[in-house]
Length: 175
Image 1 (tube, rainbow, N blue to C red):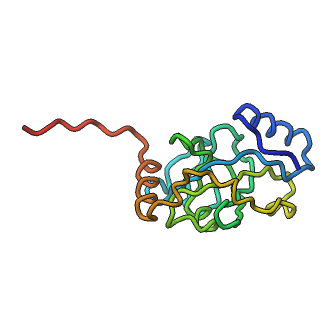
Image 2: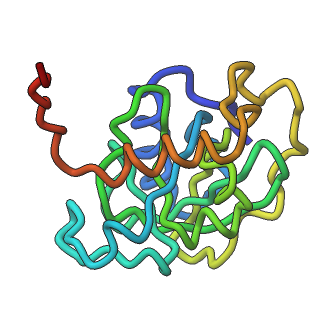
Image 3: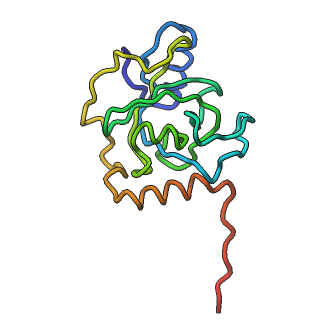
């Protein structure tokens, strides 16, 4: 099993390496914060052209190819979910993946809004996350994790930012 990539470029190289060796799964593509988006975007077109369904196990990622399937593991509780990349994002600083509401529910993060995760490569014939994932290391959880913030506050911040597709217009001051 390979170690986590230390840069976005190294993560892209790991993805390419995974494509070349299609039989190998269990390559750690990265760690970071995941957020989720749901109802307000349901039915809208994603960057891949398909309609977003908040009930499907899908995700947005900045560089993974559309259709790529990855295993996402929560660093808080160890739960895993397999998602298919069908959109681009997240565009919030510090986030590595945006999950659909269904995927967030599988990871137990709907109440938290933001959760530290690992993203693992899956082979084309894999139906589930690799069984040989290493044990969770408590020190691998990001220190400044919003998961420690009050659940309602984190969820509200995440969902407001994820649901907004256009920048807010500035409001004129009342005198």
